[in-house]
Image 1 (tube, rainbow, N blue to C red):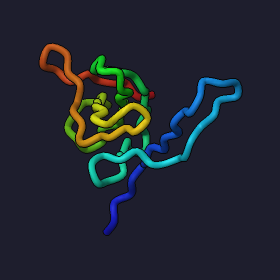
Image 2: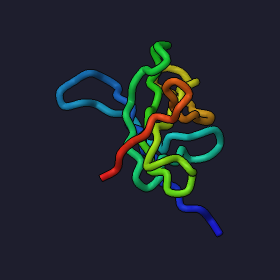
Image 3: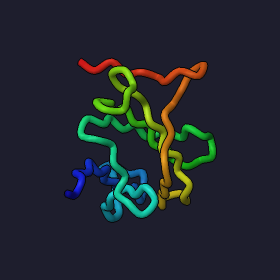
Image 4: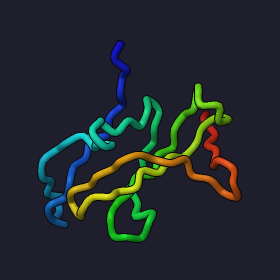
Amino acid sequence: MRKSVAGLILLVSLAMASPPVFGRMYYAMDGPDTLDIGNKGSPYVVDWSGDGLFDLVVAIYCEKSGIDQGAIKLFTNKGLPGMPYFNGWEFLRADGDYLNVIWS
């Protein structure tokens, strides 16, 4: 049975204009697969690693992962400016503990 994937669609800005100008639309990829943020994922785009590339920080609901309530995943961008490439993720931690998200 095929697993359902909640993909993330990216729109790359071509110019800082009003209204904005975007290039093509495409699904963010995690290696060879569509990047899956889950059905309740809340993505935030930020340069987490300070390398000038936009990374994804995603709050997720962890129904079966054994992590209480929710957690935060980091997808580090390993691509080029305007051509993001993600390959794997990690749970964010503070002092060795998972960062939890309270879902309401």
